[in-house]
Length: 439
Picture 1: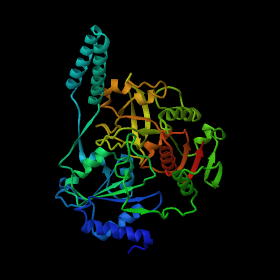
Picture 2: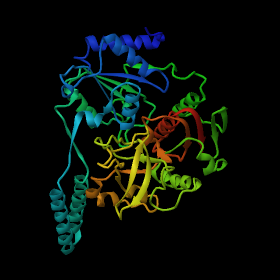
Picture 3: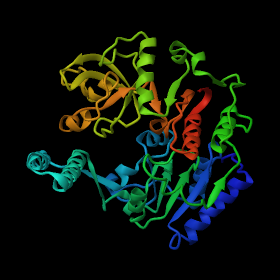
């Protein structure tokens, strides 16, 4: 028997979810359960599902289909965190899409047309040339898009058989993905925090509408928690003064902390990619690691940038690289261990650990950023593991993760005041115990 006693707000939320699922899903497909950091969304969900008698979905691929709850998140790291806590979860992409890619022949044919158009435009002038150049630019963009994976809706998805789809960390879900999720005609229960960052382009499709339940009382951490207090101030746009807020939480000037001190402070989170590159270089220097493109070994902080399901690699997962060997201009090889201490890849027939081939481009960006690099290397990248230095990461990359200790480097990110609030709130709420806000 559980000793959990819900607050009045939580008990009401559990009743509302139960009533919606049992009586209203035909007229209301989506139920929005929102709450700010620490308000108990996951707890409410757990007990609501228990009262409804819903268990995790069992796919026909596992033997016979037993319809139940399918849980999905926008990021692979968020799905990994949920799975570690006992809730089977996957990314929304892997749940509802199958991946297709253009063949090398299709890409080469499109590239040939671009080259031919570039030659023919030289004989034009005036308006005709301007119009032709605009058409060529559109062709270039289409060619670039062909080099990226394309996602097609998978009608055989577990979502088609589930009784309920639960979506966690939904602030990053855009309109197109939301429409695709709803096309399965299944009840969808979304857990959202309207204070968090929306998609890089546009607004969050699920968090951009009014919630059915908004949890406001803080439960995960005491209301006097300094982290929650600063997060609330950030969300509400209140100024956060310099100084200490408890033994583990403070706001300081950037000049008051050295890279050496930052090494001891936990995960460093910033706003912009340019800042991330600079901070990674500074942190590597403070750690006494060698200059250059290649990681120096097991002491480096490395973050995975691409899901590789066959290897168990998840975008956002931290990795340890050992026995690093430069293999030429495009990649290096290394023995890789994931953040759970699992050696990635099966040993070879002689029992030696497998070596992964890792794309250099993301590491080279720290020396000289090249916007054309990743488009140029598209064919080779498909067969390589992608990773980069992870001493500093952006708040977008950090969503779905938490660390005991976090340093937030406030670089002023935000197209608007609301964007800025969301960024700062998201970054602050990645911290569980210790937080240093640098401005």
